[in-house]
Image (cartoon, rainbow, N blue to C red; front, side, top):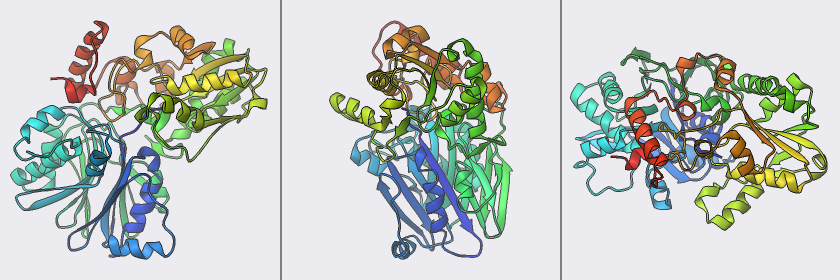
Length: 490
């Protein structure tokens, strides 16, 4: 299992109605993007906010009156977060819950941010004096500070967004509010993380995924372009390309794992790409497929791929693996003895459906290997006589700098071992990865428009490439990695 950085949302109702219900449903549709914390911020004569740890809570009919009193106003932003920068202890998680608000010389700004800043150490030095005494803050604080500095020097949102894009390296899809209630959004010049825009008669909404629009009855209008700024006020919507997009580099992992299957990227439903991933695997490994009695899928991101594999090969797809929906704990934050118990509890295996069978298992990715190893072990215990793994995402060989919580080489099983060695390590009969060229073709995008750094070692931004190369050399020399590369490498 891996973790995404955040999901963002912003909305403006030109009729003046309270916007909170749109924020609530828009983020609830994206709660898969961040389980650690959630937050809402609206504007009516000033900022009104609520932030808390955990999943977005249920709200009943009586409770909505309380929330509308707590968060009044026709414009607002929200966030669901998983930390890929800053500390993960409870006080730090509370402190870094978004949206966050910063102030500089009487000017306030609030942002909801998805992504990760690569040059975080450089920005910490730049703002050392302003942030003196504040410890263990996330990169979102630095991004907001950069935006405020741009506002002070340039005087308007376009200048501030351009200042960020020129001075911040990394992935950043942002929805924000100014101190006078203007909604804005922008995306880094490579467009690494998703961000889209939709409108109905009264409401304009910004969302990480199109499902955040759909749940509110808003159709997807367009993606926010890499390097583009969108500003929404009562006067309407203004869009401006404030920085050139030299090369688009959309995160390929969105297609395999992060996004909901009913979201749309580059005019294609994610579930259709995943269906094609499975068909690709069936064709590519037809010799192994002919040996199988049944194909299973790790729910739920691999379900569509399993159907594609079934369609291509004719191997029956059995839903004999079921996820315990409300087991959401992250295994890596627990003690070793509890970690294995949590992993074992995530998926239930219907033993009678796999006993005595040669089983193929479709999964979206293998990162550290802990979850996969546990599932293979459980399948063996259930009586499977063979277990062959088919992985929709190509073998991960390098860290991510842009918002996936896999920051070191040593934690990546694919960086240390070949597919044959991985199979032995995990207790499987074979591990079969989808090749990069097959994956790219299924997305419908051009290879040069995707960020594939974690599977190729080629990153779209220069500092990330430099860090990866240096850390790779250290890793091969056997040196210990001491944390997230972008937070420790100097």
